[in-house]
Length: 283
Image (cartoon, rainbow, N blue to C red; front, side):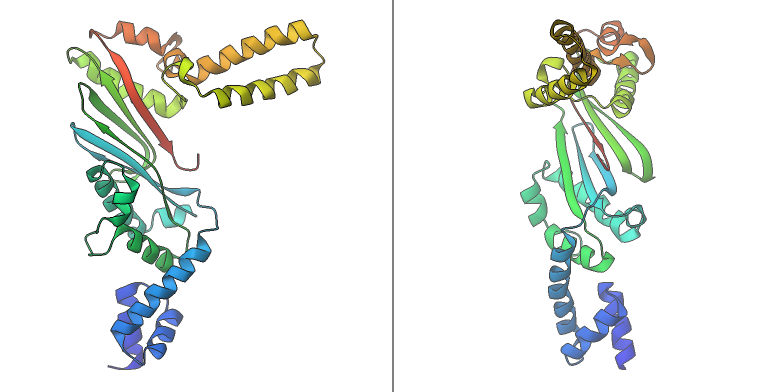
């Protein structure tokens, strides 16, 4: 086999560039297996250098069934790579593995993929091949425990891969057509309105304190008297809590109503929003 044919075969096997393949073959004295090993080692080095860069693009994968559903994000640097077949296939398989390990990232990284290598090794190889920082981001698994799971994907790129994904878990006494409709609508509402929590009492205190500081500085620049400033501040904080809590948000289908109002209108006893997660690439 000629040197050029060896380079072509190595490129086909590893996906690495012509120069890297040529260099690895020379270092390996023409031995293909050794050249592959050299490229993998160099790939680790290249991957380490790329990890300092920013990865704000990527895809969200939602996988599962009525008993268990999981969501995970895989990030990259550019939208161009997010549409690359290698990245798409990697993300799709990662989504399936993530659901099988219940979003345990340590188990995920150690799980072998279809090609026989672990997720962590495939990640390194993909970074070396594509030439961008790629990371495994947020993830969560929902199990059907006296509840029903609903999902919504926005800006779908392919199959179950999108730019924004939502999973919401509802509790209720008896299923109905109203429940099915509400499940779809609340998933879309969460995608559009981006609530922090279900109830305003659950918003983290550090987030509230940060908002108070912003409001304080804003009112200080306006030169408001102390008593008036305190009243305005209290009103702004209450509004902030309402706008960022799912139950007190304006219902996207009818802004005259709150989400909590819709819950009472749905024809199902004991209806309750148990949990939700919203993941949008870039946020």
